[in-house]
Every structure is written in C-alpha cells, then in structure tokens.
Length: 113
Image (tube, rainbow, N blue to C red; front, side, top):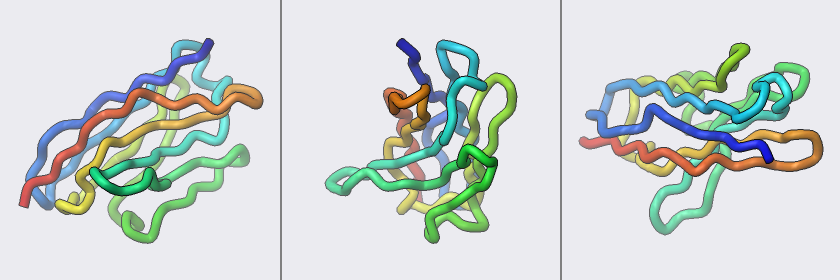
C-alpha cells in the first residue's frame, strides 16, 4: 500500500512563508493527479492546489498568486508565500495510485496575526 507523508508545517507570522513537502512510500512518479487540500477547524476540507495528469495546475481563488504547487522526482511541494491567518488549517496531500486515492496524514499550518 502506498503512503503519503507531509512535512514542513509549523507556526509562522502573517506575511511569512512555508514550504510543504509530500513524500511517497513508493516511486513518486507512480502517483498522479496530486493535490493539496486543507481543513480548518469547523470547516470542510477544501482543495487548495493541484497538478493534473498532463501537468496543468489549478489553484483555489483564495491562494492564487501566493501559493505554488510543484513536483520533482522525489516529492510534491506547496510553496506558500504571503501567508494570512485565514490560511491556518491542517494541510493534506492527495494523489492517485492507479485508481486508488491516497491521503497523507496532514500537517498543521498556523499563521499568527
């Protein structure tokens, strides 16, 4: 079974930056349709950013111009700049291994005002 593990979360002041990483227990290139989601307390999990099978990237309106999703041969990444308190949430990476969707365990991002 493939596992995804996020890292890079933490506490940062508003206006700061964080870079989240997502590693896979198998060859990262076997994971497709990778995406980052987040869930704030009392709210539903929402899509933040993703990379499609053909490499196209999409972003939630709330993070456009501030967040960048990328991947290399080892990990997936979410570069988060100009962070705001409303970005505070648990961030999850998600990918497809064949037809099976895989979630990471999440990493906490807290942005102080």
